Amino acid sequence: MPQQHAGRPFKADHPLTTPPPKERTLQHIETLITHFLQVSWGPVMPANESFQMVEATKGINSYYLTSDGSTMSYRTRIRTPSYAHLQQIPAAIRGSLVSDLIVYLGSIDFVMSDVDR
Image (cartoon, rainbow, N blue to C red; front, side, top):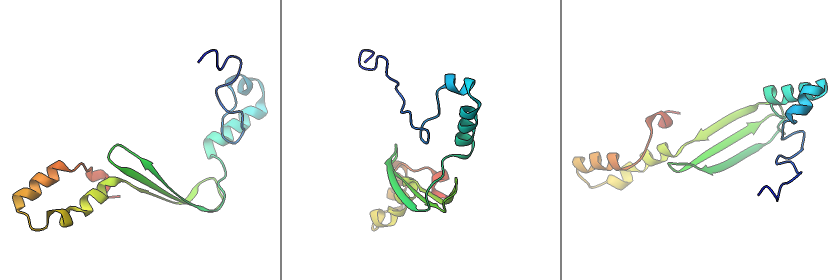
């Protein structure tokens, strides 16, 4: 790998996605100001909606963002898989005994702090 990247930067040199190199930030005040604004406020998001699913350790996390064109989202919704795990209990345990419910609750993997969002 060192031969592959000899003399080429590892990061993209795009001003909206990657902070400038530290050497340039320490020498030019304009670069320092740009870096400060990007890190403290973030990029300007176009007014739109976005929904993405990301595979996580306990299932799939869903992210829903609504932007009004500013640097912060208008609405952010994160759905973790723990609530979906608890929602399917009545259908899965129907017709079983109470002792089966206790064993079933112990076998599924959920986090209560994720459920109350």
